[in-house]
Image 1 (cartoon, rainbow, N blue to C red):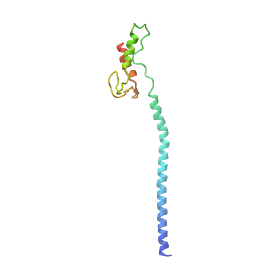
Image 2: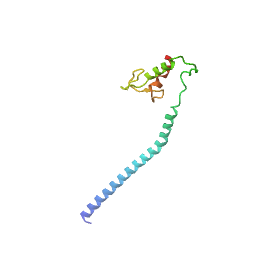
Image 3: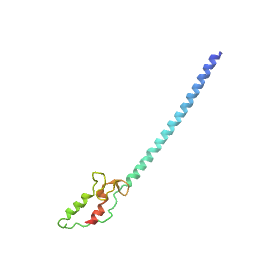
Image 4: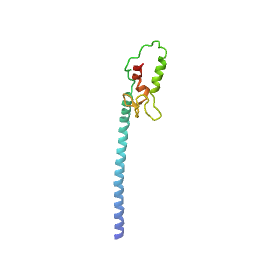
Length: 124
């Protein structure tokens, strides 16, 4: 055989081996990604279940007072106090002045009125 033909066969052989090597690497990578997705689906579902089941309604900290006749102006007093527990134009809590969002016991953002409810009830 001629030297040119042997050289061409050698180049073709190297290219075929390189193609096989790349195919094996890509195949293994696809297999690993597929396995990760198959594992992530049930693990992610379990994680979401744990997150959602932890956000149950907590029992009230203070027992709700019995309904009683309000004195004249008591409803106005509650309205005045509750109107302060809002976010003002600068993004601060009108009740305590905190610039960050208030968080409930699970770490989720909550309104200033809900966060300061016990303090408002104590002032009435």
